[in-house]
Amino acid sequence: MAYDKFKILQSSAYPLPIENVDTDQIIPARFLKATERKGFGDNLFRDWRYNADGTPKVDFVLNNPKYSGKILVGGKNFGSGSSREHAAWSVYDFGFRCVISSFFADIFKNNCLNIGVLPVQVSAEFAQKIFAAIEADPTTEIEVNLPNQTVTLLATGESESFDINGYKKNNMLNGFDDIDYLQSIKQEITEFAKTRPF
Image (cartoon, rainbow, N blue to C red; front, top):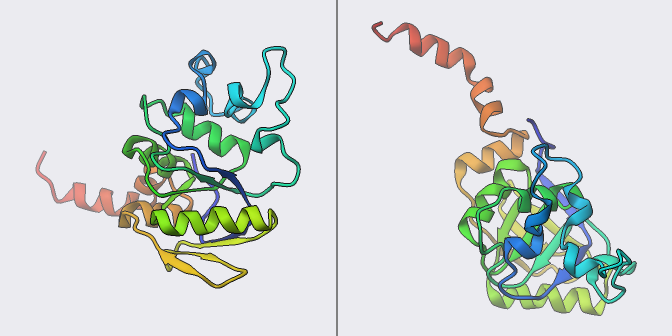
C-alpha cells in the first residue's frame, strides 16, 4: 500500500513529554482485533484520552484544542514494549506524519517507517527546546526536512540533523512500502532473472 510522499513537512505539534510510552499505551491490546489499517486513530492513547464512560479527558493533550498539527513530540524511549504494528497504524490513522523523540524503540521505529510515519530522533537537549517552544506558543511550527535530514524550529531557526536508513529514506520520499519498492524495480528484477539458470 502506497503512502503520501514525505519531503518537507511544516506543521505545529502536539507535545507529549512522557518517557517510556509503550505500545500498549499507544493502542491498548483490546483494540488489536482488526486487520485493516483503518479506524485505529480513534483509539490512539485510548485510556489516556477517554474516561471509562467514553467522555474525553479534558487534560489530555490530544483533547486540548490549542494543539494541532501532523507532528507528535514524545518523551524519551517512545514506542517501547510489544512489537505490535497497530501502534504505528494508530499514529498514522490519527493524522500524524512525524514523531519526534530523543529515543525510539527499534521495532516501533521500523514499523513507523514501513507505513509512512517519519520517526525523527533528536538529542535530549534539542527535544527540550522543542517542548519549551511549544509550551511558549502552541502554534509554533516545526520543519522536518527529509531530503536534508534536518528538523528546525522555524521561530528561532534552531536546527538539528537526524539519521535515517538510506533505503527507508528513499521509500519515504517516494511514498513506497516494501512491496511498492519491489514493484518500482520490477523490470530490473525481470532482466536479472533472465540471466539466472533454471
